[in-house]
Structures are given as structure tokens and as C-alpha cells.
Length: 103
View 1 (spheres, rainbow, N blue to C red):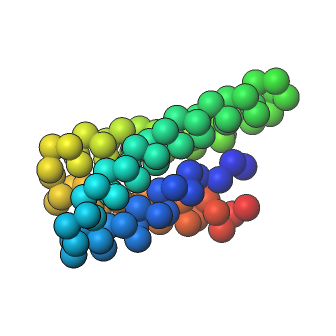
View 2: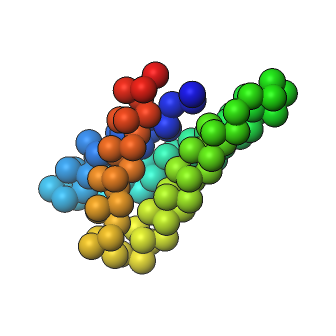
């Protein structure tokens, strides 16, 4: 199973800076771009690992689900809806840790 994008785990560290410093917004925004790009690469890697070998499509579903959640996070972050953006971020963090623990 492919691990969830690890750049997302770093966003948890940066969110503290977002709340306490003037440059936290810049770091969180940059981290969001990296996380979103990693989510897209995660889907691509899952498809490439599945198609040629004819293995289970399960990693593709996991990666696609993560990309959907990441897309929702981006929309909620841009719209400044912290009441949903934060809990969804915690959920994604937990799912990332779970995926890494299953390796």
C-alpha cells in the first residue's frame, strides 16, 4: 500500500505558526500547495502501480479519496471556513498517520 502524502503531516506543525506568527500564513499556504501536488502525485503513483501489474485497485481508491479531501481542504481554506477546515485537517492528519502505521 502506498503511504499517504507525508507533506500533509508537516502542515500540522505549520498550523501552530499560522495562529501565532506573522509568517505562518505564508508557510501554511506554501505547505498547502506542496500537499496538494503530493496528493495528485499520490494518485498517479497508485494508478501506475496498479495498472501494469494488474494488482488491487484499492490504493487507487485511497489515493483518490485523499485527493478529494485535499481538494475540499483547499476550497475551505481559500473560503476561510475554519469551522470545517480545521476538523477536516485533523481527520486527514489522522488518516495519514493511520496509512503510515499500516506500512
